[in-house]
Amino acid sequence: MLTLSVFLVAVVGILEAATPFLIGLVFDTLLRASATPTVTIPLVDLHLDLATSDGRVFLLLLVVVTAIKAAAEYGSTNTASYVGQAVVRDLRNDLFQKILLQPLGFFHFNATGELISRVSADVAKIETAASNTLAEFLKQGAVMIFMICAVFIIDWRLATISAILTPLVFLPTLWFGRRLHSLSHSNQRSMADMANILYEAFAGNRIVKAFTLEKSESAKFRKVTQRIFKLNLRQMMTASLSSPLMEVLGVLVIAAFLIYARAQIISQRMTAGLFVAFVIALTKLYDPVRRISGINNSFQQAFGASDRIFEILSLEAERDTGQASGAGCRDSIEFENVSFGYDTGQRTLNGISFKVQHGEVVAIVGPSGAGKTTLVNLLPRFYDVTGGKILLDGKDIRDFKLSSLRKQIAMVTQDVILFNETVFANIAYGDPLAGKDAVMEAAKTARVADFVTDYEARVGERGLMLSGGERQRISIARALLKNAPILILDEATSSLDSESEALVQQALQNLMEGRTTVVIAHRLSTVRRADRIIVLADGVIRESGTHEELVIRRGLYWKLYNLQFQDVSP
Image (cartoon, rainbow, N blue to C red; front, side, top):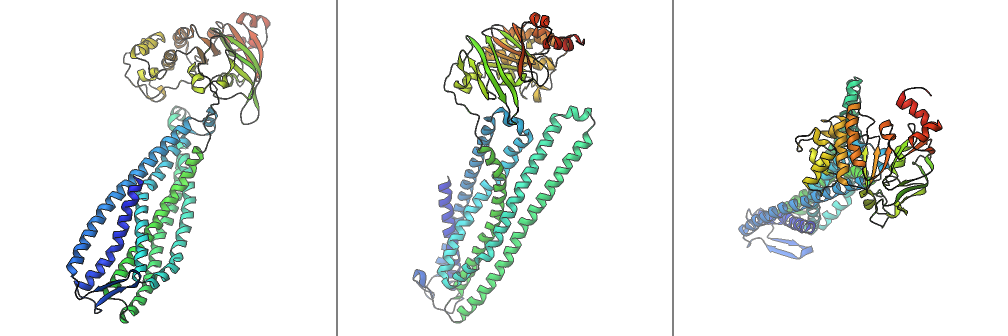
């Protein structure tokens, strides 16, 4: 399509360059405006007898050329637009996929609103440049090239003088371009800030209302929009200045040319028609030069946005070094002297070693900040260990392909994420290939059927149309449908009331049956049933044993037991 577009704009350029010649010949023959009997153009060795030439032929040829040029221009514009839109589509898809493939830590350090802005607002800037502006650039570029050829053919001396004056036109264009590039980059950063404020204010609307901070959020939003207003105004003022300035420079250049051409006509070295052809060609040459200045402005704004896009595209995706497939838990999961630290350099976990046998339920407890969630996030390789290793059936989990490893692990977390889809679609997310019967069976086992009558009803953004317990049971149904041999429960009932917890606990028992389970929990009902409890504090294992064994020891677990479950000081 791009090749076809370039061919068509070449046709437009050639015919556009031929038009002034035809107009000049019509002027000299049909209107008999020239006293000079012949036209001589040395560069192309052209000699025409104006007295015997039929002006009607040139007029008809002018009409035909104009019609062909119009058809070619229509085709080139549409093919270039197709290319531009296809590029934008692929760019947006690549950007979305690259973000999805980033490790979990990437999303901790990049605000959601910022990422949304890069996929939407930043790509929108490129969309304008890559579709409409690209088509215009190809057309005006071709016209400019062939018009330059035309003016050199008509009078090479005058064309040489115009070439010498060209820097007067292009130097301001380069300055405007650099200025707009810088302003566009700042504008896109501000747009990202605005998107982030919008996302947080809408997603956290309950907190905004609870603390009556509507005015504060509005003030924050107004501050950002004022900054965007100023940046947009500067961009518009800079872009709008380029065209008038180019026009003034262009008129000065044309005035000088006309003085020269007048002397040529008086000395009969140029016909009136050839003079008209030169003026038309010069005017037509000026037009693409002026337009390319505006096109350059548009491209510079797109380049400013593209810097932020290619910053994401240049990132390395989540490392998948493993080659083995078929991960499972037929024997055990073993943490062997595992250590981990985030990019800050401080270690969160240090020398963690324990083993979970097939079918065993192991609970991990400890004070806030002990590293419990970080520990279970290492198992599906949301993060890679910085020391030691995690073995699955005796094999390092880094040897497994990420997709193979994660297919064997189901997760139910405290912060339930449901999509703004139907109940059925949210459960089916556990296994998109599962049939309707399998989905309904999972819903029944997770006790979703207790409160759902219409599985095609939407649950709202993040499932906000449901209660906490209802959302949790849908997430359990999703995990059941996945039917993975390893289960991670991360504080799955900590935010629920007693009634909801009792219903969810029944669903969890159905889910845990026959699976190797790692539980992070504060609730006694879950912890007491665990085959083994690991007490984590300050990134190390302090105690390990059953509930009864740990209570008898009267150590850290016993203190947590009294504080959290009995509300009695130790």
